[in-house]
Image 1 (cartoon, rainbow, N blue to C red):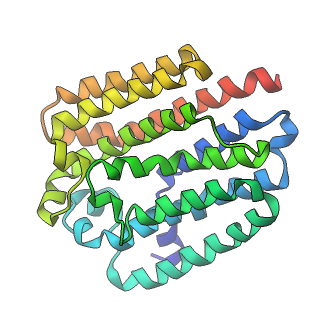
Image 2 (spheres, helix red, strand yellow):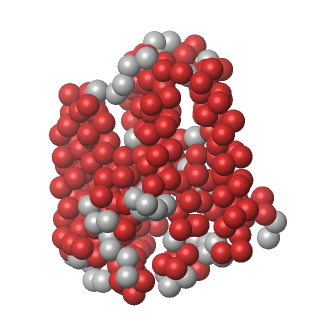
Length: 281
């Protein structure tokens, strides 16, 4: 496999929607007209939140998670195990691809630099020491607010103001739930590797219940901005958690986890047009 193809696989294309989708939603929420979507900055950072940003998130994760990943069947059968001999080269590429966009933000989106630096901070120290948030139960899920920050960046770039705190909190609850549920299939491998996560701390059932409650809380906080669309999305995800909690341990939870990117893409698509249509049509 060529190194370029390896980089693409490490960036998890099926998960690109988790970073790029919020960026598009943030643009739609901030834009006063369709022209805002076609600004040079909007296009440049759209490219950033596709490949380079995702390589940062998942590449750093793979560098610091090898000892856990080598024990996890999900990494060898569904994803990709990044071996130590690749780590240094991967780190150099991540730095080289992200640095030009940090410099570009200084010129094209200076007001959004706090959101960009927040995204980089949470992406880096979710996996990297000395914080390594992913090994601290509850904090691991909280750090996944990094997936909200592309929306905050887009909103700040266009408007010069930060997202409303209620919107940020709603997004934080949603991403915490997404993270916690993704940790459920990894409970056994994480325990074997001695890694503590929200799922190893709460256990399978309580983690799924936490996810359902977080999705509902997110929908309630988003209601003033999204109305019944937000409530409907919250009920969809909470319904999935209700289904999951009654499933036997094993592969069924992982099968639900595997379809989440599709569900998230559909919900994100609907959310984008819910925000965009009244403005642009």
